[in-house]
Length: 181
Length: 201
Image (tube, one colour):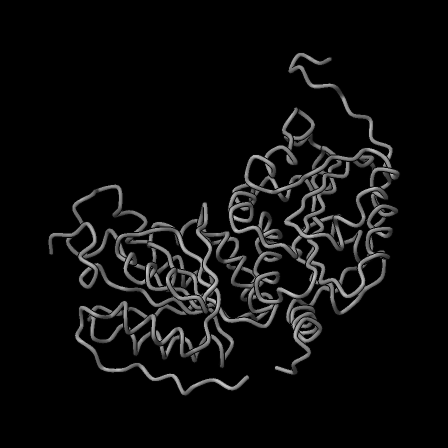
């Protein structure tokens, strides 16, 4: 399939959702599965408004992991958008990516990490990166809004070209989601 | 009537016969199986590149099928799975019910027991109505059948008519012969993807 050369363009750090959406579109990402999260709200809205993207709101994040496997099996690229709390829900479902060597691109918005004020967010937030790694997912953290798009771009290559499961973990420092940091 | 108010269903459907009959009508449909006996039922009808056997990710079969259906909107996608498997991801029916992929059908082989783990009763044995959940979740149609005549009467909904569609086949609970299902996930996944897309990569 001919695709435009996707390049993460320089934008103001606060515009990372716009930059990531444009990148996903250029990468021919056609399926977007998400559980709503305020840290990802702008990116989700941009995907919802994009007629080239088939979006699905999930009841729980592991549905999205299974959907992403189906997307690739059907020849399409997808992205799973989730808060860090949802990563724990995905663990068993992630086994298909290792067992079948199927690409996965996730964008995870962190809670319980940078200036969190809600105590119940901390346990899963602190376990997120370790849980992903234990489930065989390559973790690419990013804590600067100006670098989110280039991190997603690198992760997408690792996912779709090198056929790996990869999660871009977006710091709470960027989203300021539930944080006073 | 039992204490729970549910009438006990005595199923007449033999699962391998029913699955073989459905697959004989599949045409070029892409088939995704759930974990356990459903994968064996599909393999027993003949291994094909258009079959994706899931031997893990319990609860994931419907959403794998949904992802395939969105990627290949012109192909029929049929998920064949067990009642225990679909209950493990029952929220998927709400996700699919609101998205309404018209090329997706889900066949639930409902033996009312966890056959792979010692025949413990499942939720459906105690009154849970999976077709009712599908309808309440936005599936335009979902049916329950207890006989092969019922299966015959709904073949067109499974393989052809606009969906999403879900059908529960109440089948006999009995020990099944093991059927070899291809074990190499990377092989099965790539073979399936090639069959779905016609592409080499």
